[in-house]
Image 1 (cartoon, helix red, strand yellow):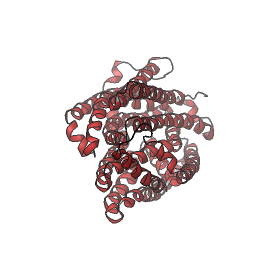
Image 2 (cartoon, rainbow, N blue to C red; image 1 turned 90 degrees about the vertical axis):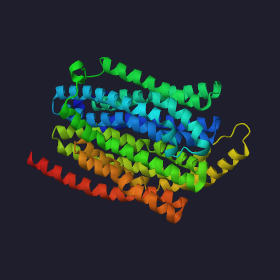
Image 3 (spheres, rainbow, N blue to C red; image 1 turned 135 degrees about the vertical axis):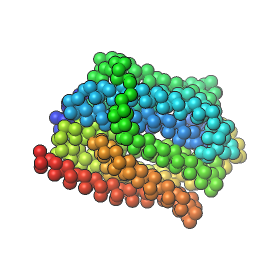
Image 4 (tube, rainbow, N blue to C red; image 1 turned 45 degrees about the vertical axis):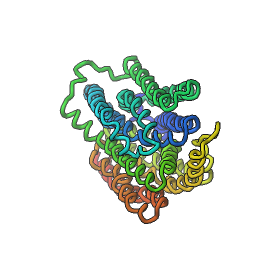
Length: 463
């Protein structure tokens, strides 16, 4: 894999840069998605379908805390990319040091009450009935490792902002391989059940953290901070917060959606329907990896060139990213549309003797999941416009538009739809809320993105 330095972001052809940035990001996201996907498959086959629902209940809580690190990482990385583009290395170093301090303080502060109020948190996110006990086991163990996951997410975004996507990709591959190996060892060989799944996940976070720590301490990183860079500076923290709040708000909305969805689906169809949603969620994480990879690869390119006032390159990066990602989204939709049954069967326990309750749950999942997948992925061909459009405003440091556009899809449109349509159309109302929200958010984002492109064109002509 060819190396990319920070200065290459402002000089190499956009198409070539996008490939260099997007492929490692896509591979990294693919591997992380495979981690969640295969982890769920292992748990489903070796523990049972209720265990998949239990993990689905825990994910929004642990991911929200970890997303604090991602928010700090993306917010700070936008500053770092623009600082490097503007040849201001001291600001980049101070930003990175402040990111480390904020991530440690905030995530540890969130984990402690998360562990204290575990018995209240799990039921509120849909961990009811037979789901509660396995969810509590998984939640308690995984939360110990979440601060390390947050540091990994923060550091990974900084690595990408330096223009070194290959190392970022490796950082995402390591915990995946570790988790899958530990899953097999702890669940299948040592028969530790949900405890095994939880410890496999937590130990994989530690592996990732060790690698990222090595990267920044080695010669590979250009960001060599000292103790003074760790001291929070109000203006840096404020800028990190304003930009990172976009990512945090998005994850907060995702957590709220999990809460609403798990409770609505449990009321509509019990544990089996929650398991269907868990499968849909895993597929959303998995098959959209190339679209998300292109979006991640686009961020440092747009941010650097905007900071360097190379507006023609910024515009070119937007156009090429959207066209490529929309084409990939179309392919994803076609695959899901024609073979949803094959994906559904991957998650279901087939070895050993199944109890009557397990047989009934599996039959319900097989009957409902394929149609749910088709409906949820219906707007995939156009989703890249919304993702890249919202990411662009974040890359150039415009926090308010980035926040509003990021929230438009899941917050402003999806949550109202999910509260209204199931009351009219039942289960179908749940699943059609996804493409309707995607379509509406894409229209809104396209309008504001087009307006911003016209503004940068004027800036280009004025230079």
